[in-house]
Image (cartoon, rainbow, N blue to C red; front, side, top):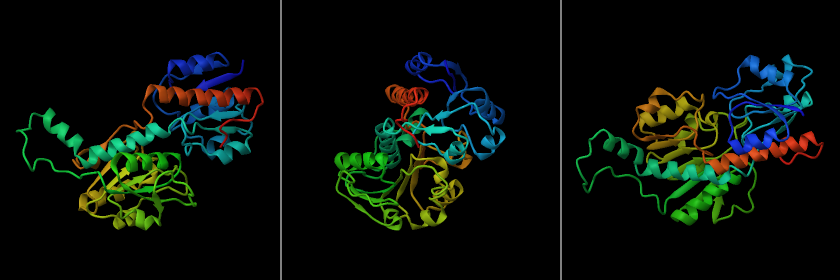
Amino acid sequence: MKKLLITRRLPDRVLDAARARFDVTLRDRTEVLDAAELRAALRDYDAVLPTLGDRFQPDVFADVPTPRAGILANFGVGYNHIDAVAAKARGIAVTNTPGAVTDATADIALTLILMTARRAGEGERVLRRGAWTGWGPVQMLGMHVTGRTVGIIGMGRIGKAIARRCHHGFGMQVLFHNRSSVLDPGVPARQVPMAEALKADIVVVAVPGSAETHHLLNAAAFGQMRKDALFINISRGDVVDETALIAALQSGQIAGAGLDVYEFEPKVPAEFLTMENVTLLPHLGTAALEVRENMGLMAVANLVAWSEGRPLPNAV
């Protein structure tokens, strides 16, 4: 049996499927692979099932010029932590798990929209500290979401799923910005320049993490948003310049933010923790058992196809 390293604990159903086909080593820790572990993964295993934060970058591949590993079957759709070009130069295939994450991630976007607009997190904190004095007509007034305009940055699978929820669930007008033309967004929607999408009541970022999208949302972008607008990020943390976002929130340039991802996870800027107009979630985008099972089984399917010499279902 080929030796497989799984870098983080996965659902039991996924582990059972992997163990049925491979000699599995499970690294049962939550921390990302360190420098030595990254190199050992390439040197000591036939295959690796990594996930978010396991940074297989050019320096790692350079240090292991003749790797034993033949595939990095990433657990997750985003793979910006893996330099796929450098991997392929060493003869290592890279796969991901698209599709399995779409609806769950879109659901978290809507969760953040509603929590931020209606001040749900703030309201719960008031209750938990015993500070609620009773209902009042002007108590904790927030944004009424129905009928608002949403600007979606990135109209791939997840962007389209967010658009469906916003349109059908809340009657929102959908604007979106995408690098390439989108012929069928799935709902009535208008493709616009990024500057116009940033003028929406609610701006949601759904682009993949890459060198091209690093700090796509920066001080200039936040400067184009409305002062009563909300900013939502469910994509990748480094798509946002967190220093610029903090400044925009502190100065009142924008009204609030809802975040599920962070630039230097698991570190979250202390400034965010003190802001009542910011909703913070601990990267819950795909945190549902059946979703994580589907992601894992998709990764295993990529591994099995590789081991059998068949075309990879989800090569990147």
